Image (cartoon, rainbow, N blue to C red):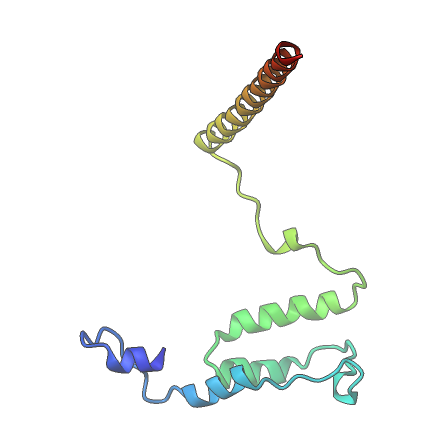
Length: 137
């Protein structure tokens, strides 16, 4: 990708000066993968280090402090809960519009009609093949 960007005659994209793409490539090609029984993979759930999170995300990475603290508060609250959250808890369901509902119904009706045609064609070819068998004997 880097080669493409550097050799692009139109110069549409620029590689940021401080982008450590060599390190990113090395990490991608040679990731730090360890077996599950490695001592460094012995993870334990503990209360989050809120100040450590704020230090890293806000000070070092430029995140919004209110959002980080709010998320950390939710995390602290949920550490006490033993049950894993459902995926639906992270996303709000968006109701389908009338147009989408009509489109789904149309697609369903087309599938049903195609299945009927297929069944009818199958029965017809089966009947024809039986007729040919009687004629040849």
